[in-house]
Length: 268
Ligand SMILES: NC(=O)c1ccc[n+]([C@@H]2O[C@H](COP(=O)([O-])OP(=O)(O)OC[C@H]3O[C@@H](n4cnc5c(N)ncnc54)[C@H](O)[C@@H]3O)[C@@H](O)[C@H]2O)c1
Image 1 (cartoon, rainbow, N blue to C red):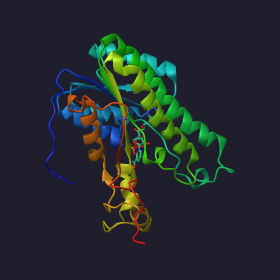
Image 2 (image 1 turned 45 degrees about the vertical axis):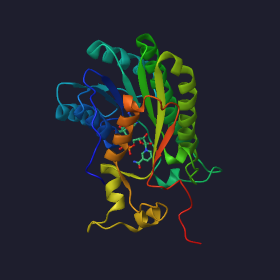
Image 3 (image 1 turned 120 degrees about the horizontal axis):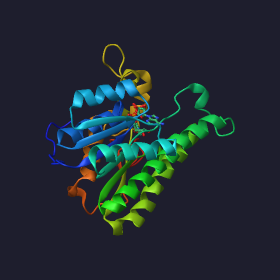
């Protein structure tokens, strides 16, 4: 990973990052805060969310919120407006995936409750937050929204139909919103991560001696760059897309996957 990084000035900008109590969302919140933004984070996890804002400082605030409940989303947005007065940038990062073996099954056996959970949190939750953000940004006449989708929303993965459908929905929701909101001064883009290391996934990738596990080696055989991404590498792209450096990028889905989906990684 390169040590040379772009620099931005988000002083006086208010950024909302959903699902920022850990993982990629936490890294995005840290990145914006480091560039001077006021950062509102929301998450279902109170203890972890409060620890994130305590580590950031007094320009950060946490709200406990389940994005799959539209009433909670509405009241959280009101709370953030009461605290910071405006919302310039919204990063819809909160999401769930099914990792239990019983949930990784073919469509004929796919559990209804797993399907419902993927759609309710990943797709509906993102919609509720986008809708609330668009209402605020329309009044302001300015805004930038970045939705976190997945490579699974671009190329289908077997045994994950709920996640694949929800993330593909986010990619097209992003494009639809971009068409509608551009005349109002609001840009909407998506970022689709490939395999990204977080505190949760790091132990799956590396064994005790720091080398890739068998599972990770199989997964990484599809990735031309031969390694998983770091959460900070997603945060860098999200910050760029939110910034004025990306002022003419609208309705795009930027895939950040080490080349996973650009072709078939084999020599024959
Ligand atoms: N890590 C990867 O390899 C990867 C790959 C592709 C896409 N993504 C996407 O990136 C985003 C972040 O992933 P991550 O790996 O950091 O996951 P993570 O599980 O580490 O973090 C997700 C965060 O979202 C929060 N959250 C979950 N449901 C919520 C809800 N209903 N309301 C509010 N908050 C909720 C969780 O509490 C958690 O803090 C997700 O949308 C995920 O689908 C991740």
